[in-house]
Image 1 (cartoon, one colour):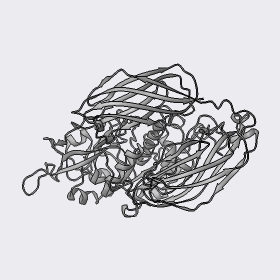
Image 2 (image 1 turned 90 degrees about the vertical axis):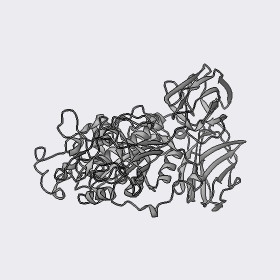
Image 3 (image 1 turned 120 degrees about the horizontal axis):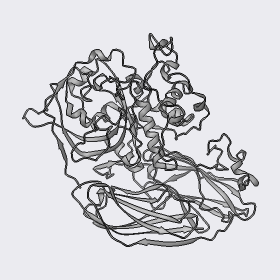
Image 4 (image 1 turned 60 degrees about the vertical axis):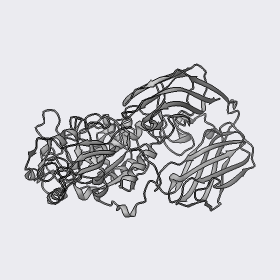
Length: 638
């Protein structure tokens, strides 16, 4: 647990009159120099504000992500899933970089691809050429960028590396004069090389706007464990930018602190309207920073009392890791290139956009009508599927139900609907199609029951998004008998939002012979060696369990017992050494100083059980200590 942070203004101030520097730079985002590039931060470009705000809805039209009675932590961060900070250099591509940073973060969180590094150069081209948006400027916005990623996909950085300088007449004679008269290639630095056009493309689910109020953004971050792209008006003094006619503070620049803009800053900045895009990766509601007035002095009220900004977001910028290298005392430790921005600034002057985890498989899934491994062949056309049951025998067919039943609000019983399968056969693969309309899908839990087994299909994911209209592939029933009654149950677990189970269905593919052994074995493994948890240490401690038993994981749970003075400081993750990591607990609200929690771990299904398993526990704030008492795993394999 931490006490509130206070940061006073620095003692040295510098005024930089830089309005003339911006005459030719309103088409790009604020930028940072590379190497011996003579460009300074005072000369950094800023973005085309009209492009950033194009099509963005107001907060009044967007639902809140969180509930009124939701309890969120005071501090939270997603630094563990961030890729390295990049440098947009001399081009106005801030939202391209912010969107790519989001994409890389989502791929890190998903875990299949180690160290993802996607091509900003290719996304700039795809947004303008393939999607056809913002074709007469260097700017764009997160909605368009995510639209290009979702529809067309982008390639890895190695296929088309980023060019730090925008094209001019020395590159192409047409790249001069009014931007509206220049061809698209002037803003994309030409066309992709052949290697990029033939490379595997990576996608994300379709994105969506979310409310930019602090409660909404924080609820989304905490409940989904994912970052948020924000973009909007750039205020020069607030960013300690040399384009301001006011006075800046070098201490703020070194620490990457962006305060709420003063009235004078707002007036001055709107004479040269511009914008910027960044990735929010955490928050600190207790962080307090004394404001700087138009004269660069610490601001006080009429009674002579200091005036503070309270509540900041931790954000990832695209000005290289040499920007904001100094830490703010008492806050989350972060690498260079990250800063802190006032939550009030974001709420009033920026919009927020998000996307979900990618759906990745490095081997073709033979019955989902997608090219999963990126080789240009889908399902039974792929040689990976030559002997797959889905391709050797026609499916048993699709069976649907249309209950059109209301989902009771905040109910422990919910609504159920049944489908009866009359044809016998062993299941090779099963997909569940669900069509639910609901005003807050984060309230919903869906389970599927058959043959004495209950499997969770959805468990309160998606936060404030509407509706669930998706297909879910479930391996839990593979190898079992299909004939019998199947029951889908939908629970609404919180107040105020309602919906309807419209239709649902089963798509079952049967085995041609034996699907292999259906015998399941559950084994228990534990480590009872207690370890002290160091205070305010992101590395924390680790405890391992070595498993020699072999088998394919069907279900896995981890039980952890911890004694700690303030468990809300803790982050707990389970790793398969040499493989992926799944976060089990991240600074959640726990009142007991001695607690035992059992976690259902979904991230290792269908993987080999044998190997070293590691529990990592870290304390992410100061003043409280504790210990890992013991932990165990229960693994069901076949």
